[in-house]
Image (tube, rainbow, N blue to C red; front, side, top):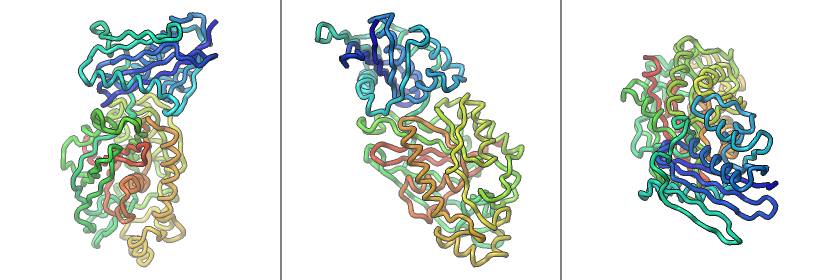
Length: 478
């Protein structure tokens, strides 16, 4: 009875986009590569390509020895966890693919292991060869290489019409590629991002709270921030809109474009980025009242409007089908939002304490105007310096940034090449964006995020990042 190692990978340049897979069968005793498989799949999603690569590897191993035991090594955490039985397969389009893979060998004869992308280079190379062939016009590309007496016999060429890119789960893919980033100038609109009322005054810095600086004039003019993309070309700009339906349907478009770059977006040696889709929680009863609502207050739940926003966000993300995992702040409003979205996506939720909102100290539950009346000196200091803390020992924005940077590094390392939904708050999302752009601390005061809005950041292996920030949520209230 043989013992084989199967290494498999799949990719999609666009998700969905031109896709291919690669699979390698290795003799576990000698380390010799016995079989290589690669195929261009047409336009499908990343998850479909990964599962097709797994199937090809298992079938190739079965062809060599139907009685063999197989150890599968893949850099797709989703496939490994689902096939190992540790993660539920809830998406109706993914169940048939997993069931088909499970039938190749009898139960108990196949084990699964997640490996970093750099340890899966052979399968990754084959997958990219297939995608390159497809992009260059070889729409039926298929390659098979088998060890023959110490050499390698190779057969390649078009596969039969209708066989490329077929199979269940075409709409269920997961984007482990970058996001659309449009260069340009983003207008930073007046005080619409704090649940603090700056009525009657000038809101230079409409703080990262849950509120609008209503009635005031926010400092600020035009914000233009750019960062290098993985290809080193730069020019990624933040789209900061007023959230007042300046472009109808902007978030619907965002749901289709987030984490779906054009072919060749990143340099080929960098691999797919870790992409975080950042979702702000839905409204709470404090949101329309424009009150500070951080991690040190009453921890309000969603309002009826907030639950409806979460439902609509979940439906939009489910239509896109790119999310592979969900991580939530521990606060009630984010956990409730995450649970509603998870029900649409068929995924479980992991809670990460580092994603909690800033602690606003004695200002919790107050409006901006009330804080200005009761603590004018502390408020002025806070608006002038991100190192300043709110009254009563709250958390400064600088302290929040240290916390978010640590969470970012941990999540990026854990989810390289994957797309993860982070359900969190205004300050953490703004901080993620600021750090990704390398923008100065005062840029926090020139961003605006609506309830249940979606943003995205792709982190590449060379340390660069690309950002897309989309805030119009008018469709969530329709």
